[in-house]
Image 1 (cartoon, rainbow, N blue to C red):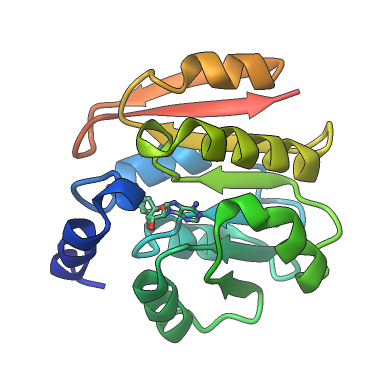
Image 2 (image 1 turned 60 degrees about the vertical axis):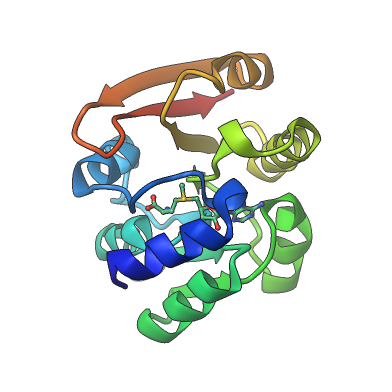
Length: 184
Ligand SMILES: C[S@@+](CC[C@H](N)C(=O)[O-])C[C@H]1O[C@@H](n2cnc3c(N)ncnc32)[C@H](O)[C@@H]1O
């Protein structure tokens, strides 16, 4: 998907996208760096946008792993649905706050990782809290929540909700980004 498509959607939905460009491959590497792809995994992606992380995940996942992406923007969801043909992958055009309901419908029994690109800094606080609480329920005590942000704005919220939060940084993204690796 082209950068101009991304910019068109950004202009229409500024408060949902919260970015000026798709993420770089360097940020994608940082987001996925601590995932053990040698085992079969169930992964949920929140906010795939143009699919930068989606394709990298599918490249590294084992044949029996599964990926479910939730994208609230119908344009992005439909573009990815058309361009990614992989039996391990499903995409739903739905909001991340409905993650539990969607998982029940798709028979995902367990989630090992949530890879979130949600623009927490621009989402209303109540929505943000609902999403993080739902994600915690889905992950149980074993799962890991990985989120990127362009600031440390989400730090307090994530420290409050998870027992362990490890933050790394990459300058090689527009804008530079922090990756939060959160577990219990
Ligand atoms: C910062 S962009 C990231 C896009 C892509 N993952 C990347 O890194 O280039 C945030 C994405 O989250 C999506 N989004 C925002 N709120 C959402 C929600 N409540 N549920 C699902 N997706 C959401 C936006 O539509 C957008 O595609």
